[in-house]
Length: 165
Length: 387
Image (cartoon, rainbow over all chains, first blue to last red; front, side, top):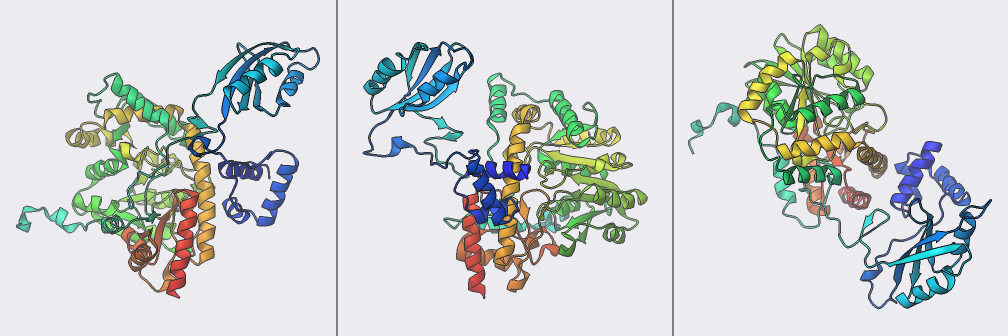
């Protein structure tokens, strides 16, 4: 069962849109079991959500989005370490991701906004003013090349010849 | 042209049945191909980069005949680590131009005119022609679908004559995907030892087994001394175009083989050898991921084919499925040709892999899930129009 669980998660990570009949065949397991297992994985919050990876730069007339990666140095607190301040930060809707990092700074925060100005205001008014935040360094993202293992731009083409021994 | 210009050997061997099919498929647009005998993965970047680095550093000269010693060391370590067979890097391994050249030099080293070699069919298209080109006689031994195309010791025994010199084995098999496990190989080895035969063991798909661990026949007691272990980087490491393989055998065989190798090829391509070193050193994760991906696709594809009415056994390795098309009443060539023309799906007729392949088609599942699903839809339509 543990193996099946891992195999199922691997398959769904590859493509969350595989149907139950397809997954059933791939994993050599009956459909009812697959269905139940997915339900359990959802309930246990192991599968958090299903989403589409979108290359927004190719979509015309959508509102522009700006992303910034912010290195944040914080003062950890006794008893709760970094968790409390991380939680304070991730509550903001603008915040896309928060990671605790090793090295020169503590938290890596990805922020989304409509403009550079909006992000600048978020950093100066909200993020920097939090008690535990010691300093921030904001880096605006200029172009996405690869995200979650997927390369943007390039269309995958099969370079093999049609029939070979 | 006066046909006496050509050698009898080359005139005697037939052109590959696959070639004809390729020519037809290449003229049609929008074909989904299940006819490709190679991985759908591009060679992992770290291996490509190692090749580029070697070129940047100017490693463009010949290597030793048997290949870079560093590569032979890696091959030796790899075979021991993965399959528990040990070959000495300095005198028991030759790096070749693909598994094909390894087959060629092995056959040329052991065959005298009239020597018989047992070829277990259905099998890779090169075996019999390569034997015939040496003046040897390829004796075809047919396997049966009831048995999942596994050769049995009895079938082997029946085919052996006083002229039999060697047996060609390939597991996991192209085109059937059939996998011979340790028990199967032990049973075959008894017959092989009893008749004092040699074995050419084509282990090019050794990395790609999905249900059981791979066993090399060279690891079975009494077999190493009579085995030519032939393998390479094409399938497991997704390196087909690099043309890099190897053959391992006891040193008394390797030294005469090296004569043929040095006079015909000199050495395998240097830049490919650098990429192969990197693949063996750091390729394990990538290979592991590929195996997971192939296994899921195999499971999906085998069950789906059975469901649409193309019965097939569940192959233990490689990336081929070999379904029966007997109940359509068509020959495998007719089936493949019509499927291509009417539904634009390319498969390979089983008959090109030997007489016992008639009534079957080879479908490769080394394609994206999207392509496999679309191909199945088209095949289902095709079967429907036949009714």
